[in-house]
Length: 379
Ligand SMILES: NC(=O)NC(NC(N)=O)C(=O)[O-]
Image 1 (tube, rainbow, N blue to C red):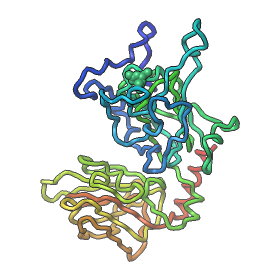
Image 2 (cartoon, protein in one colour; image 1 turned 135 degrees about the vertical axis):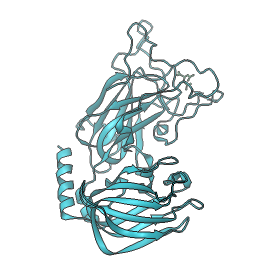
Image 3 (cartoon, protein in one colour; image 1 turned 120 degrees about the vertical axis):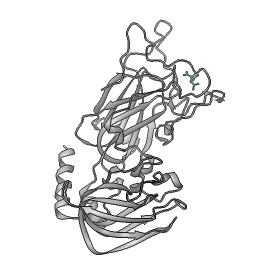
Image 4 (cartoon, rainbow, N blue to C red; image 1 turned 45 degrees about the horizontal axis):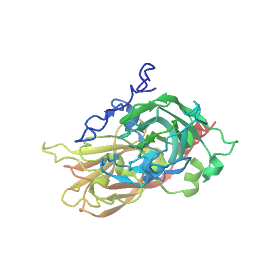
C-alpha cells in the first residue's frame, strides 16, 4: 500500500514547498495516522541492536541517521564542505552516461542494508522524508531476507542470498512520513531500502512482531519472559501521556525519566493506572524486577502484578499491592512460580515504572507453540 501516486503530468506533484521559515514541521505530511502497525515495535530500533551495515553511497549524509530515535532536525543555515547538512541518509545526484544521456537509467538506484535488532514478521514500514523537500527519492522499494548468524554486508550481498520484495518500487512524497503495509508472512533478519534513482530519507521504521528462536531460549533456560527482544509485547495501558509503556520492557536500564513509562497525575479517587503485557509464550515466572530509575517525585506509589493464562479468563495475583521506592531497583522472589501468558502491572494511584523483568522459563506448551510459529515463518 502506498500513500501517494506520481502524477505523470506533474513530476513534482509529490514535492513539498521550499522551506519558508518558521517551524519546519508546519507543512510536514504524516500518512501513518490510523495505521495499526505503527503501534507495533520497531524491529529496526537501535536499542534492540539494529544497525545500518552498509550503503552504496552516503555523499551528503550518513546512513546511520536512518535509525536515530528522535525526529529529524533541520537547520536552514547549517552547511558543510559537501553541502547542506541533512539529518538522514542522502546520496549524491545520479548522472547518465554522456552529454546526450544526462539522466540515470530507469533501473539505477541507491541502497542501504539494515540489520534488524530483533528478527520478526514485518507488518509495516515508514519511510520518513522529513526536510527532504526537493531531494527526496522519486520512488522507494524495500526487500527483506532471513540470514542466520552474524552475516557481514558482503555476505548479505552474495548472489545466493534470496531477497523478497516487501515494498515494490513506489512513489513517495517529500517532507512526509510515507507508510507501507507489509503482508509477507515470514520471519526476516535484514532489510534493504532502495531510493530510485537517488535522494534522501530521514528515518526508517520497520514495525512488526518479534519472532524469537525457540532453541536459543531453551538453551538459555531462564529468560525474561516479557522482554521485547524475546518477543514480549505491550498490549494496552490506561495512560500513554508522557511516554510509551513499551519502554518498560526494552533492554538495558533506563537513562532518563522519559526512557521509562510515566503517566499523568491521576485525580479520580478509587481508580489506578495499569499496563497489560503479553509474554513471549506461556511461561513460569519465578523472579520479578521492578525498576523506578529516574522517577523520583513521580514513581508509582504501590504496584501489584496479576497474571492470566490464555487470551481470556480471569486474572490471578502474582504480587500483592507492594510499596515502591523512587529511583530504585526492586527484586521480588515469588513464593510459587506463576504460569501465565499475560501479565498486568497496576500502579497505585498513578506514577511511573522504568523497567520490569519477568524471569522464568517457557513452559512445554509455550515452547511447542513457539516452535510451530518459528517453523511456519521460516519456510
Ligand atoms: N540543498 C540541498 O540539500 N542540496 C543537495 N543536498 C545537500 N545535502 O546539499 C541536493 O543535491 O539535494
